Image 1 (cartoon, one colour):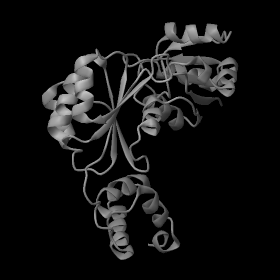
Image 2: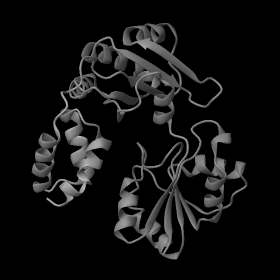
Image 3: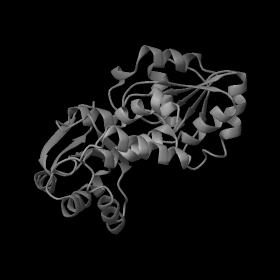
Length: 278
């Protein structure tokens, strides 16, 4: 049986394409691409001639059988227009279908705009929440932001240039004047990071026309983090969540918000013998 490879592709600079990614695309039986025209240009650059099929938002369910049939005969590579497929791009349904059919799924790490922006933002990176594109409508956007306003995590969003100013207005209104970084054109010739308070970034782009896709990295809620639970309190909460049928990763994420423990700490705690035996 074939393996489904998730191949990260450059977000701007073609030199970021790894040798392993090139080899995998060359050796695959089929490449499933978000935009075949875009991917064909990439393949031409690297002199690759692997067959292509489209796999995008509006045909992703209809294409599952075709791609699974190809996987039955050999390896398939999934690519999006840029970055890691499945991260804010089509891929989740295919990954799940491949796993359900008994295929291996293997990611090829590589370029990722949210992670690149976060790493260079100057904001805390030890605990962050990636939330994808902000809602288009201002009412929905403000309601969405209110749901994360009290969190202490660094917040990471994507935004388009034509909605940037309205998004910054709502960030300021709902989250307040926090520290943030707006990153655009990552890895490209005109790569730019605008760092400052939300009001300062908003002022900058009121005077300079926004261009390119943006990653917005925003500081979490100021103030003290939740008071750290004792081991006993955490174990009781874990037991409660496990009795409800919760999965380890879901429980770790949920309890990290209120316990003062990190997800990694909770995950490790849950794998101790004292918890496993309960």
